[in-house]
Length: 345
Ligand code: NAD
Ligand code: K
Ligand code: MN
Image 1 (cartoon, helix red, strand yellow):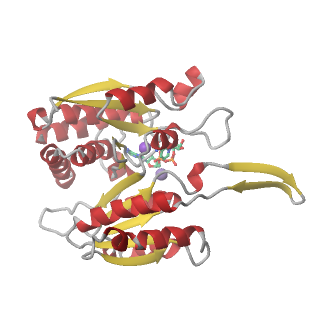
Image 2: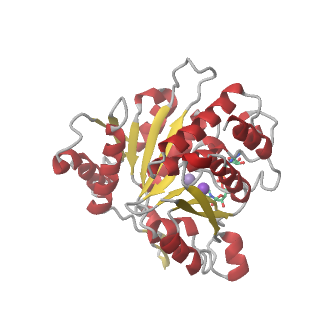
Image 3: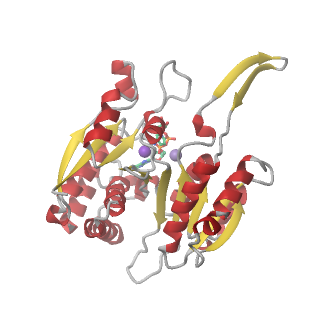
């Protein structure tokens, strides 16, 4: 590639503050990556209130036809049902078949010599489970009655399982924990568990990866008690969402945790956090999750050197502790943290 076309979808709230920061960090990589070209794209609640569409057709088309990859910020989704509105991030993951949400959670030790206590990756299935959003409400004998469909397929479980084994095999501990609740949901979670377990036999690979299982509730408990037991965790969509937010608390802030939404043909970096209405517009959102998401995206595309440089710069800034946003008990602004990172780059 002579250039790298990156779609930017800041969307709502602090997404508009942190995605521009990630863009500047990418630009600072210079010749360590192909020359970046950015394409600004719309999506989100604000787009919906302005145009009546949360995910414009044009955004999807440009991502598919022109972009090599993308960075997504965060959307504000109302908790009540709004006719015609559907979360664009959930839709985008489906449209681009970004079936894996990969979320590394790593604590940065206060000094470089110490081993981090938390060093895990949550691999979340990204296209089904309760997030197929097939909900209905009827008037029944007990008043209103609401139901939701929870979809688990062999195909989606197999490919997310394979991605998880692949990631586990590349790590030093090579340990995979399957998260489920098949003691209660024996058919749906049972299928997920069996299918993931079947990946080594099916592929004839990953014999060096050790496999464990943990029910989702006790997995959260264990995560708080002894996070060091986990290496790679693979989970259906909803459990993966919850577990990765919980893991974020262990390392200090959601503002640190990056992710990629990855498929076979496309990758989209995205901070795990939402639009944070409580701090929106104050200029104090932590840009690190987005900068790290850019690093993950570049790493996924094979630009290891650029990715490493971003991660090292961020690690240095966190360890020094001079420029930290309020979520990390600091007093710095988004811009000051970005400047500190750019200084290291
Ligand atoms: P949130 O992640 O937006 O915020 C949770 C808490 O973490 C808040 O106190 C917030 O200030 C803090 N926080 C999050 N990111 C931060 C950052 N970068 N720097 C400093 N502090 C940060 O979650 P929420 O409050 O439950 O949701 C707010 C909105 O975001 C909702 O509309 C929700 O639907 C949406 N949301 C979107 C996504 C997404 O875009 N994929 C994900 C989660 C939530
Ligand atoms: K987000
Ligand atoms: Mn979430």
